[in-house]
Image 1 (spheres, rainbow, N blue to C red):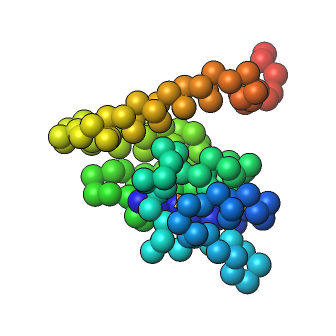
Image 2 (image 1 turned 135 degrees about the vertical axis):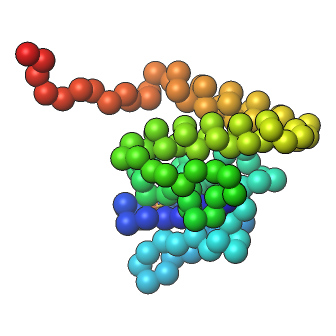
Length: 133
Ligand code: SF4
Ligand code: SF4
């Protein structure tokens, strides 16, 4: 799977410098990810760096067209619901296969980093809008 940059990109330039494969290029005033070069940061980092560095929620996202077979491509309107749905499916799929030591450590570290982010006091949770009757 690769990542892609969408129209929600605000051109902050952060992703370009953190990509370890030089897959992110600026083309006609827009950032794009070269799918031939993007390898999901495998072998470099445990978390895709463009996604991690992006300050927007939808400017840099997984390219669902490149998901491995067996992973659902259905999307809801909720970015985090889609993210966790994809993550859980990926884990289930890998658990069904033989797990190498590399992937076991990869998921351990990824889960720990995610857990730290979720419990970070700087993480903002959405507040409800509207008035209860
Ligand atoms: S996922 Fe990694 S390799 Fe792919 S574009 Fe983003 S930073 Fe580069
Ligand atoms: S980090 Fe996000 S908002 Fe900034 S240039 Fe990259 S895709 Fe665009």
